[in-house]
Structures are given as structure tokens and as C-alpha cells.
Image (cartoon, rainbow, N blue to C red; front, side):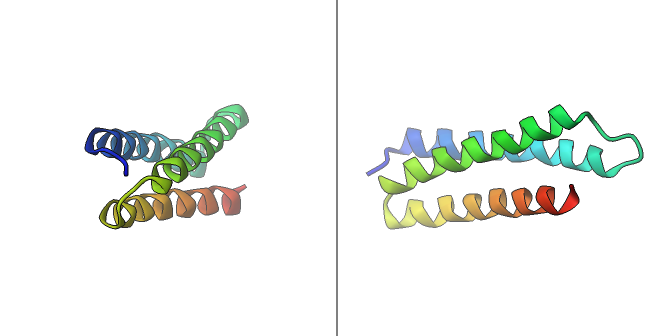
Length: 86
């Protein structure tokens, strides 16, 4: 079972990664996009966060899994948007 601190830490980190990557994605859609390296790094951040969520999911309670799955879905959606954009 994932402890409460581990769960909260993972959720906060996931939200932070989503916000950072969303900014990179939004910037890339504008007239003056960021660099390809920045875009690639953002995609890698999402992939790493997805892996961390998978690790916590394995030890989570059913209630925790629900919240983690929602966060995982947000990450996957952003990954899909980024892939379709490029």
C-alpha cells in the first residue's frame, strides 16, 4: 500500500510536470515555438512521470488508484496531443 505522503508527493509532482509540459506545448503551437530540444525534453518528462505513476499505482489502494489513474490519463492525453502536433 502506498503511504499518504508518497501518494501526495507523486500527485503534486505529476501536476507540476503537466503544467510545465502544457506550457511548452502551448508555446509550440504559437507563432514562435520553442526549440525542438525543449519539446523533446517535455515529452521525456511526461514519459518519466508516467513511469513513476505506474510504480506508485502498483502499491496503491483502490481509492488511490482512482486518483492516480485520472492523473495518468491527463499525462497520456497531453502525450497524444504533443505527438499529433509534431
